Length: 439
Image (cartoon, rainbow, N blue to C red; front, side):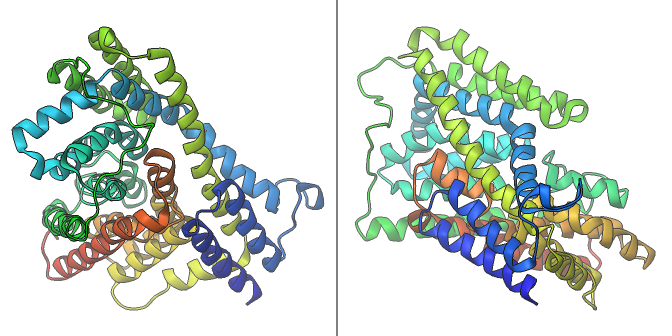
């Protein structure tokens, strides 16, 4: 009982401190120690046998494991975004979009850019880094409140693309190992759900922005924003080429290299940006330095939350919660969806929710005759809902490190689009599968 209080209390405290703006490098380990103390988890590795759970070991294992796995992608993604910004390539593309679609379609342009890159296999974090400069430029020209930039980036990345059939994102691929399905499992239902989330979410996003503008909110510039007036810009095609190169290379090498394909893709994007637009750079060296610093801040914030998840998974209450949720009676699709969603929320990770729940769920449900494709798609969609609570690594990185906003200003819109919209989409998927569609 005390362990469960610690687990839930630590999570709620982490969400509260995150919303209040506390540095996550402080909030993450602080909330993790609350979970550890109330669960009786030893604090130091010297107090337990080698390999046994302990606060420092589990926290730093999660923290360092994430850094080891993702630092090259964070670094190159941040540098890519900065060189796109410094060369004027992002501004050139944004101006072209404005000319073709009009300022009224600025939000749509950003959503589409994120969706194309995400569905092409580019990491969610990298997409945020890469598209942010264009988003700032478009929001500035359209005079829209910049606090909606994180929601716009997130909506295009982690809703109707990340968990859809055919997506190369890891959230669509993890179930394959456990269910012996394909990345196109349940594609008929997936298509309907994706279209619903895209249309409904975009309508809601536009409505929120329109209401804010009606109340007098406008774009507020910052000194660190790039000055695009009175400077020569490259041709829009020269700005688009690096994005296309990242998309193509990541798609070609994704099957063989998985997430490491992004290293090659981003290097290609950086080199092509430099070679095609080198005469337009304001200061290439400074862009690389700024990108490196931004990557360190971003991955540190994210790893701090991952470390919390490492401690949470080690306490007795976590196993109790998992066993309870995976044993929910009734429709296996509902039970599986609830289990994956809640675990993803506790760990702040969509992939974490799947990896923890599927080894338990898959054998039980497959033996019971549950359609594997329906289960695959339901679990994929459900993993992308509660994972986007305020403490989620991607949410924290996008709002704070990339966009420079606060949770108080930006999370309302982010939560609406990345939690509520996917939950409605999940309910729709379960209904459609229950009616026999796609089975």
